Amino acid sequence: MSTFATPAGRAGTRIVGLGSYQPDTVVSNHDLAQRMETSDEWIRERVGIVNRRFARPEEKLVDMAVEAGAKAVADAGLSPSDIGAVVVATCTMPSPIPNAAAQVADRIGVKAAPAFDLNAACAGFCYALGTASDMVRSGSADHVLVIGAEKLTDWVDPVDRSTAIIFADGAGAAVVGPADEPGIGPVAWGSAGDLVDTIHIADRNSFIFQEGQSVFRWATTQIAPVAQRAVEAAGLTLSDVDVFVPHQANLRIIEAIAKRLRANGAREDMLVARDIVESGNTSSASIPLAMDHMRAAGQISSGDVALLVGFGAGLSYAGQVVRCP
Image 1: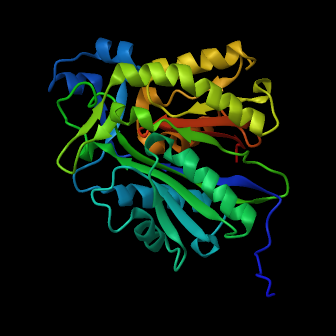
Image 2: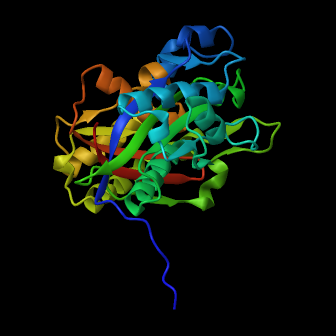
């Protein structure tokens, strides 16, 4: 009987580069108060956001993904020809065909590589990172470019204060490559499809709808255990975590999850990403954006143990432990 050949696998994987991009237009709470019934105080108390970035009408999701992806490749010390696959996590493309990834790959200079989009909404980056890690470990690709990119302003009612105060635009990227020792832990992931109606877009002519209180209750009770599962799957304990980078959904949610993790063994000095304050909720882009911003600010260093966890529409969730590049 014939035997199939299989590619040589890798002992481990690691994030070897990061990049990010945000539009130039900063929109403050005071700006939003000029077009809807809200205030700076109300927004800060409810979601913790002070500013967010909105793309210009002519600025496309693919444009932002290209900027972030090219920076991540350069940060990894690689050339586009070194990238074996491109994965774009997004839920806000203006149309389902063509996908973002093939366009992004071509514009960056990654030719003839497999390129696909992945839609797990706000959990998308963690889903894509887990997929990329598995691709490298199995030998399907040497280096995979993972990008979380969203233009949420295309899908948000600009005068709906339940969503317009929260969502924003941007892109964040990471390059996953081989490593002698594992630097990306197993992904802990899942879904709660019975809650699908809590965040959805009804059809192509509709805006994002969100039941804020239902999502808040779900996230503050269900996500900390997912984060703990990711730590355990990596063979670590919560006390090993230096940095906690959750999806930047809402500052109250972030603080509630961090508090629960500390109650279960995380250190008091564990750094918690709060990029939500100045960037808003950028869905699948929020985790790599936060990591890149924290590194630029000198808050995290290479080798730090970071716990990532994404959660959102689906409802979908995923997390893993990584070493910072």
